[in-house]
Image (cartoon, rainbow, N blue to C red):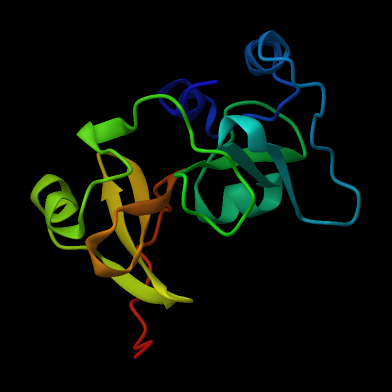
Length: 167
């Protein structure tokens, strides 16, 4: 499963014919269905990747029109580096935008420009770039320029996030 392939399914439920076939081809049988919890994940820890699903109502409110009907819709995908506290193996394939898990914040700024927001995450720091070519990119950087712990991609929301003062 490749992160660059998964993003094409943003806005679709896992039951969508094409998305279902993609998941099945990658040996994934779980299909998120709303059961009182408004979020669900398909995580493949040994492959270093996790897909995030929200309710159709959440998607409509924050992202816009659905691409197909279904109550749980793909909204994000994360790929993990070797150093993470979530128990994931390192994602083995290429990251988008020319990034690697050894990339630094300076490299990310050269690619995306100044981040929209940033905040601490334990000893790490997360930076987000809103609406870069229709996608919001989140990067969790390890301390001391040691690279990226994880990357989070989602379709850009209709309204930009408001930066908060976390420091």
